[in-house]
Image (spheres, rainbow, N blue to C red):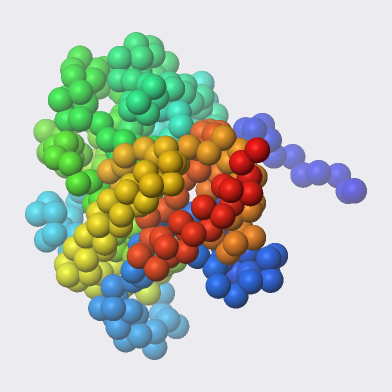
Length: 368
Ligand SMILES: Cc1ncc(COP(=O)(O)O)c(C=O)c1O
């Protein structure tokens, strides 16, 4: 092998995130035609038909660069959230905004506090900037241990990341507990509140990042069009923060980061409240259905406020592989810092039936 080019030292510390397996890959590997993907918390009923229609209309203009100022989508978000446009940062998925946040705030030696298990991308982006992720385990009920997280704040702490509902546990942080955490927190500590799954919260936990932004807390609330809006493949997410922080995030934003098709689809999906509501209701209905079926099968599960849940399966990697052979893609907890559990996205009814059938079969085979 030739001489390796020199890279920044942080680059050798990175571990590529393993996403849910794509349908095409499983079809290729298993020689199957019917595949059900319940691995990446996508929308159970697909994209908004209005977004699809808008995309068809926009396709003839793909020879033109997108609007780098993202005027129409920002306007639509500003009307929807009743906030000035200066508060928004729009990214190629919320993951791009997480990257921008680290680029703007994290210097070598900085500490960032987050929970574990939580969304693995946080660590990747912190490490890439030379920072250190201080991981505080969730408590035994899989909720944030806010006391331990608060105790971990020290002079090196630059940021704290909260994910509510948390991926992969589906648990939320209560408003009162969050506010207690904020009390007396040094203003140099920036708060990331990842609300990618907040559209699926069914309980009334009251947590919402926007009021804190308006009260001038150093905070960003992250949202996405990948889940409740059904546009994961087109990649649009956004952050809501102070105008000043939004300005700095936009300074590092890659030129033309959100394609013209993505901007058009997101604005149309935002306007389609019917599809949004239908998506949420299907998740809520199917969640109850899955709970009752798991109980019948004697499978332990976690209650969720999101569009995925965890089931307790000791040999999660074996069951994951066996389910692949049945044409069902899930996520083994061993890939999510949760060995002994399997994360399953709540699908549409037909898909959930296929999952349950396959799971019952596989568990019978795997039970020793
Ligand atoms: C907690 C969390 N935040 C953010 C994202 C990223 O969403 P996007 O598709 O907008 O990049 C995900 C995706 O799965 C997620 O689980």
